Length: 146
Image (tube, rainbow, N blue to C red):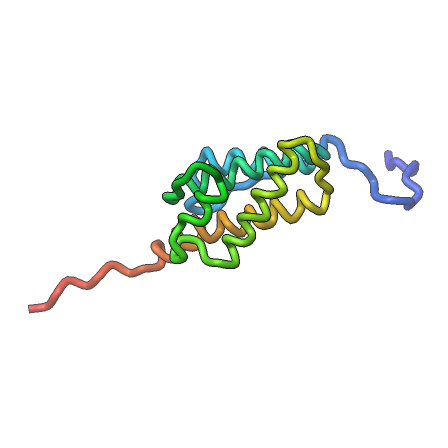
């Protein structure tokens, strides 16, 4: 039987709601799992949760790639430019600031969270996905002839 109660006004709701997933080449399992949680918080409308977990993902990735310091700001800036380029460092600082606002009882908007998660995805892509794919494409050196 076809349900004809939908009259074309607005978007139909689908149950159960889709659960966002994240599984990219090279991203450590713990970091990928946390990022997936941030995406799921966003999908469920939990903006503070998404912002806080997104910031957690950033900090875990920065530390995993060698970031050092007393604060996340210093950790981000401590990464060499060949690990995280200047534009992505700027994005990482945006993630940090939105996460800090959420942690310190300040408002965050859906747009803030969308930007935070987009930047986080870009940072993870740069830190893990691209290097993994480049390494996979490198051909083994041919043995010397002679």
